[in-house]
Length: 293
Image (cartoon, rainbow, N blue to C red; front, side):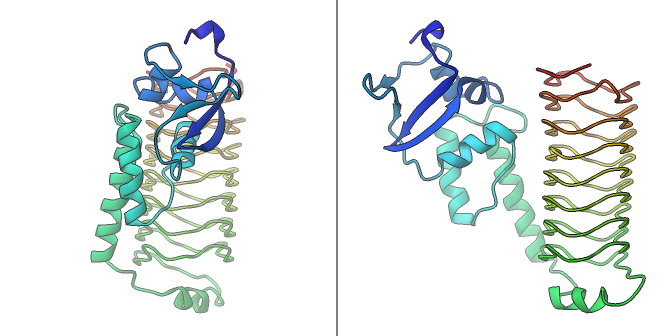
């Protein structure tokens, strides 16, 4: 199969289950994978000449997770048994070469689950709801790991120094909340409102902040390695933050402060950096394809 004959849109039949994607998705994030080899003339494939589908003889159950990883670099939330199945598929597709590969990401999630089982949360979901009915709520230094706090109004709550590993904050109102020096590894802030929050010194490795409102937030010195930051970071302060391997595809960075930040191997696909302060930032190996500078 020659590159000149490959359309930008690719049709795949994974064990009979149909998918559509692009060559860029299949080759960009994991250039040494089997899928990248297939679509860069390094691998022989079977293609249905009538329908145009490239056939791969694998179970298609988890292939959508493979595609989503290649698109966004986010590890899906699954059961342990489903992770075992997904690892087998990732091994087949050779998604293990990258320093932030899918297999490593799954292993990290499973290790965090084991740690959380050893250190259960000190409060329940019901306890938190009772507390937030009072004024000036503080959970400073409290272990809330693994709790589902999605859709709650947690504005102005002080979580400083708390353990928030794998906490689900999706769609929560966290405006002006304090997260100073929290351990929030693997936490999920998807679509949460976080305007004017303080995350200085926080550990947010592998956190999911996709579609969150992070306007005017402070992340000075925060650890955001491998975090998913397709979000609104307008006027945010990330000076000195560690964003190595983070995904900022499509993020809004107008007037954001990234001075001295570690942006090595960060995914900045189609990001407008014209009004972003990047003095002293480390951009070695960053993916700046389509970025405006």
